[in-house]
Length: 175
Image (cartoon, rainbow, N blue to C red; front, side, top):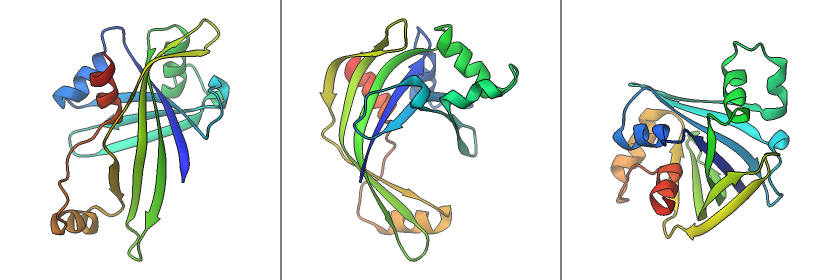
């Protein structure tokens, strides 16, 4: 089990959140992630970009303090610039505990619980301020691995499977 923390970023008009709610692709989701109960430090976080396309999804990540090694034309460098220039702003912090499992067929599962949402603002030195905490009553079971065996498990279970976006739920609960 470990604690996972993420600060999500969006435009002032919440354009990325709205794209996700509408299911429009392609779209991106931007977050800074860190682990454990330690306070947030921007240079100790991991920049993650989750992208959704018509037929697949991908996640790219890099340590935030390593981005300066890239050229200005690099995608990560551009996102870091947007955070520094405040064209991407922090919107919410999501924190939760996660358990990890794997079966003999290589299907991995995670269970997220104790999910907490907070509005997030940055001071000028990128120190976060958290407001309006809300706890989610739901837990999340996610299957990861080869899509065909994972799909069989889902179809043969009696669990009600649904889309679940922590960022979307945080935005709907806090704004």
